[in-house]
Length: 301
Image 1 (cartoon, helix red, strand yellow):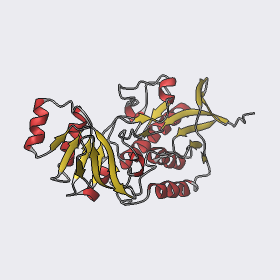
Image 2 (cartoon, rainbow, N blue to C red):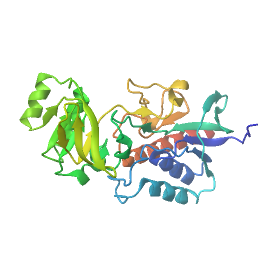
Image 3 (cartoon, one colour):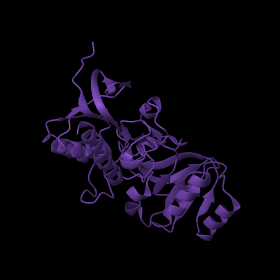
Image 4 (cartoon, one colour):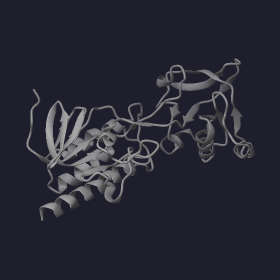
């Protein structure tokens, strides 16, 4: 039997930088908050976080641990290590079910996304060590190295162009037909970026450290790092089920203070269409918390 609790001010679904940051702001505003976290973050393969001022190089797991320690100072901010399975609307807000059932007045969706890895053999063992999806997160560590970009069409072109800021030695590997326009091919050639359309059969390396890319014609391309750009997908469909507007890529559309089109529902982090950096996600969580507290205060005044 499910247990039912009293109504809280806010339920936050997602315990990453966005959800944790929102929890801090709301805790300091004396709000009662429950944060649900199922423990499977986007950064599961990452060993270090970058681009977050004062936290440069920190293990993402340490950030989450320290955040929870800080939030422990606010007794009305509680954690549930569980995955939210269902949310329904009630007369006073929302009913959130994840083993237990909690009623809340406002809901913040900060569930994040999960990366789609290139469909290559044993890619998981390289991901986070020598295969990456974000040059702003890992480009500095790979500067001036021989880099491969995996991608086709506009995505492959944009990633190859982006990597020119970090290295003069980039090869775009499209794993089949490139899908590039004549102009894109001309620009890549002008910038000394080779395009290889041969199908990829595998990666070569040891202990997650890439040394070469293997092709169907038995050619081998020495590379120490690969960056890719493939569509990520949301870790939860709560927004769609609740009627929130999403774009063609599944990102939740938000207005002022990260409010969605559904009254009482807010969103923050990688689930919305913004720069995909941890520090930005944290800022979005803080902004959403401001909007949530503002709405609650006005309702109660």
